[in-house]
Image 1: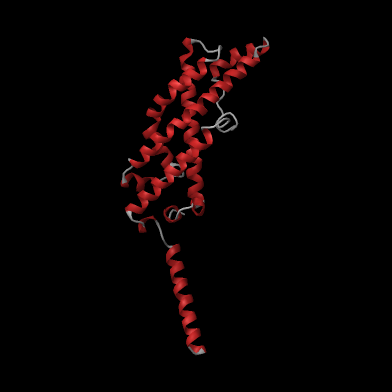
Image 2 (image 1 turned 60 degrees about the vertical axis):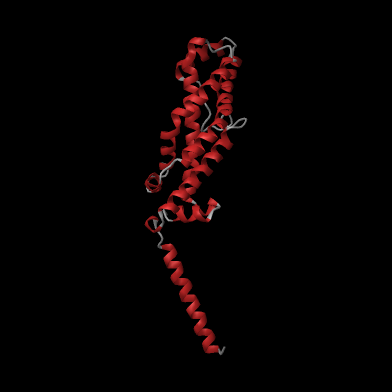
Length: 217
């Protein structure tokens, strides 16, 4: 190949690459197939759910994270203050620890139900969620799994908090409070995973996820 042919071939390659880059940058959600959109979202949701469960369902997953740590409900604050004044602050601390340990024990049970909810998602749901806000997928997740997960969490939380002498049988509302806060923490963590993925698709670790979430930027 002579020098002129070489330069011509090189410039054609550069032009071709530039055109490909422009087309790649112009990719948007409408260019994705329904199958890609659905598969990408499902992969992201499963990834986020498993990560959230892994972060929260361990010792200090709740207690050691001030974003999800469960505090005493307001109606117990007065009683807690009096107990501390009477030198029984240790009992109050034990109850707070028991509440958070109960949440940490319950969260791992969520994994299977969360994954099942992902698998049951329709293609239409997936496209709608992808076009929604930063936590649209998490909100959908919550709407589909909060009630059954609450039913699974409640017995575990009831058993854990019952071990603390401060809780009486008539205080059943405490177990419901802790169950609700446990779920709030779980969905908050899933939401953080979703927001991170939407903001930084390159960190997804999957070509399909990068393709789907990169199209949203």
